[in-house]
Length: 221
Image (cartoon, rainbow, N blue to C red; front, side, top):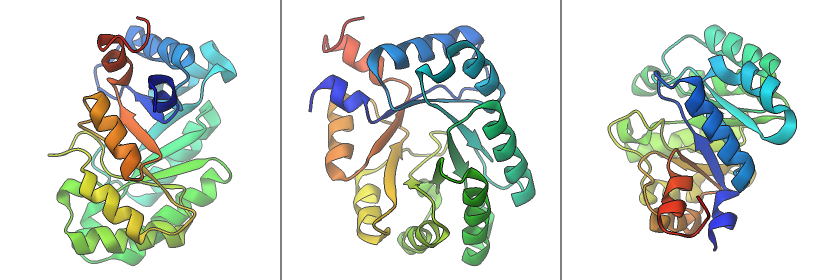
């Protein structure tokens, strides 16, 4: 798989709390130039990016990020505002306190509520695998599938670990046929990107894909 083909699977990401507009602008320019799947940006930048770039790129943003323990109504309000501002993809963080309390029905219902709001647009569900047992991961595959989400996503990139190949392989065994996988966090080489795609991921969340390929001389800088 060549660099440009891999970049079609990349959500080109900048979610640092201190990211200035210049970094968001650079991200968007690179996304257009190299044909990434989307840009994944903070909610506060969605409207401005849509005003500046229009339909030249796909805008993804985050909800309940990065901790996930805000209440469902707050996440719903975030989602509705992001869609109003022009987001086409939403990456939501589940409530891990519900997981640890065994309230998987609440997790599933929250995903369902947000998917209902998103409609035909894409909803990705961040489960933050670094905090989960294998049993919890498997149960969450069921929640994501039954709630009708489009993707299960490994990580925020702000937890103790990022994406692990074993988790992608586990997801692949337990998600429904209409659910895809996004690996995010800690993807730092061409080999990493290839490995996650080969393992079954359809999207890669990373801030460094373009610079990795540039440094390797695989795309022009």
